[in-house]
Length: 448
Image (cartoon, rainbow, N blue to C red; front, side, top):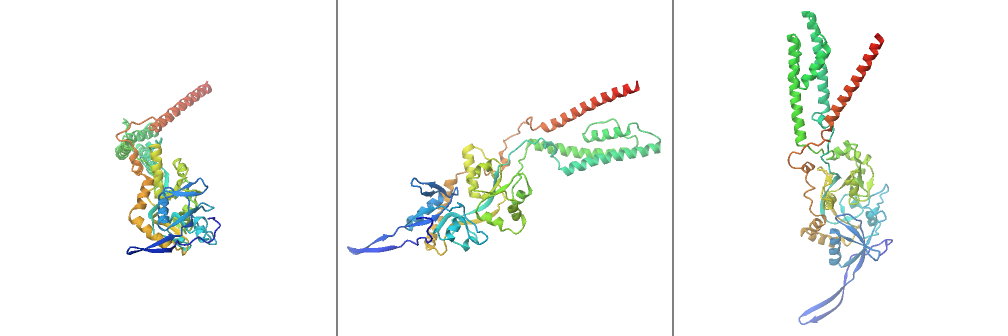
């Protein structure tokens, strides 16, 4: 049946052609008119796979292929799969005209479209949706966070605000000690030599828990430095304890676990599957995080299954249904033996229902609903879906569970941050030494 056909075939009927009496029973011979019903579909793994045939036509396999076969066998029709020119689910334009598979239903180029489709009020204005086949959530699919070595990790025991307050405290205690000792020197007639260097070095050494023989000569100054000793003791004890815990049991940082996290970062762009209900959902948002997601959208991709390679490579975050994400996890683990895909814990949209879309006033939908209810109540649809997806318990664990058991030895990369600080201090000392030598020679030459 050509895709240019405007009116699809209607429900199959039967005709009584003959009857005869055999013994005490009357036998009626019935012949069915098997009609070719045009339907539309695109590939959506794991629900639907489009398989090209040798004669140039296409068939579908997977759970939706099984559903369609049961419907065609029990309702006595055959079908021809017609692919939409855009090869997308479909959405409206400014004039209310829909494209994709739903546009074919609106134009009556097809009797129904397999998907299954997310059931939304907007879609029900141009087509009739069947009873739900299954439910799903909309979620975010991204590269799985890993335990990575951070050269600046030794500085992350405290936040930047704590470090700044600590630096300000060191500066304040140094200035206060210098001023106080100058005042005490005038009162008691005692001048401390090299007061500035003694005070600054003492503050730094006490902060690093190093001993020092120098102390202020009078009680008021000693009370002040004793207070600083207690504060520095608490600070360094906390720092060493937190740093030990971080090095012993490192945590995996999950930068994106919700829509708020997504729009709060600039490292990874995000994309949507073109022509889906999720695309329409964000496009029609009036305010809030959803509107920002659409305004900063990095583009669209063909479908979530095809986008899996780019997601694994960390090119962008894909917003998809959780069924496809779990299927991608199963593919990835079965291919590599490792988990490279992470599904955010917070759903973008929760509990959406999916069904088959029929053209308006289709005479097929009543019988189709009866068989769909029988298949779902018997658990056949979920059984077919589980068979298609497989088992991925390993990859559904949180990324923090990826670390190996026991205490792992620190490698050079993990300790490279402190070594860089040590190396930087060494070269600073060398430069200072060279400058002192040059200044000393220049001063000697000037004197002579």
